[in-house]
Length: 149
Image 1 (cartoon, one colour):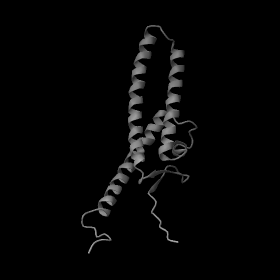
Image 2 (cartoon, one colour; image 1 turned 90 degrees about the vertical axis):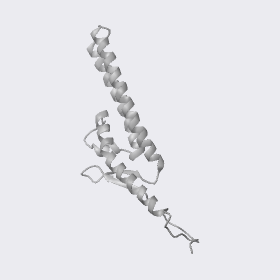
Image 3 (cartoon, helix red, strand yellow; image 1 turned 60 degrees about the vertical axis):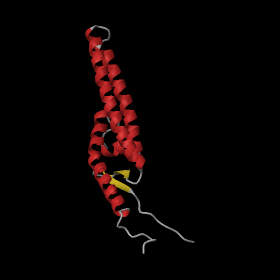
Image 4 (cartoon, helix red, strand yellow; image 1 turned 60 degrees about the horizontal axis):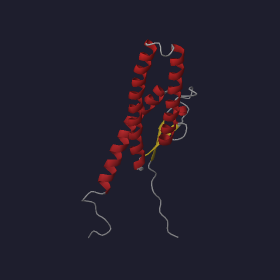
């Protein structure tokens, strides 16, 4: 029987003092697409939060809602957005990515998630550069293939 093995394209990034890590599959184009999607989603959610904050300020000033009701709705909104963000980050970096990065935090907040994503950007950029260099070296015009004379 013939067989072949391929080098893993998964990179590990240690995220705490316990040796736990998150992963990035540099050979999976969907990672890069989804990472960019996560960045866009965070930007969109940030804008939406700022717009909602203006609306709530106006409603409070007009006496339409109380400070207590407003605080409750803000907490609910942030918890829901944070849960969605945690799922998106786990899908990209592996199950429990934020729990690993912030082991003392039971339910990471939106700002913790944004801090995590910002910390991952240099790694993603580095891995993209490495990947592009590997592709360039592997498939350049001077490479001698099996059919070369």
